[in-house]
Image (tube, rainbow, N blue to C red; front, side, top):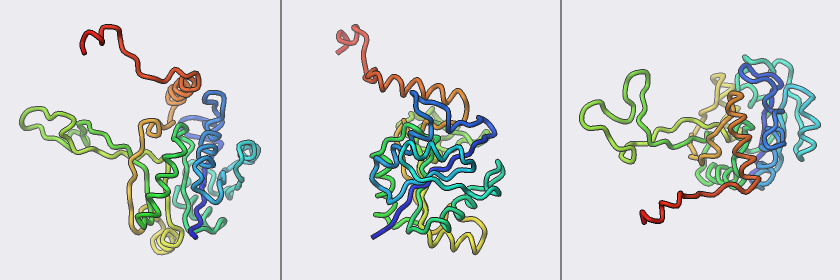
Length: 238
């Protein structure tokens, strides 16, 4: 039986937004949303908060997760994610580890389970969630998925671009650790796959503005104000 652990990373500091994991979204700390969704998904043998400060221990316990205090050397803003994953894997043996990211607090539990199932069913060694966006994109000043020649392409004709969302990232332990030992990095080890997630999962927290937007959405959903409505004139247009 495949043993899969959810790792929810948390840093007390942040270059752009201090203590964002403890900021409230609809009355719940941001990291509490990730813990709840990971547990509700039923996809994991264990759900563990991987933090750089003891302050997260009672938060993890309050929402039903285990707690791991990473080594001090892995708590700075210069710490590389590969090293955080390697340390966690060595401290918590499992067949696979899923990084369930608190920066996507509205990711549904069912979607997390679908990501994990996709990973295992397709024999992947590494995975990152993406958003499929059918929009005209530039890399610098050069077109990526359209051309400057001819008429302006309709968006539905475009090949989607796939920006990383990072809401869930996964690795199989053996190939990840082998790549770390061989070349010092392993995020895209072995057979890599991308999994497209929904719009709510793609709203990730980087700034205070992101937090306020997500708080407004979460409060609206909790109040039941989450359905499509039309102006009265729409009836006449049918």
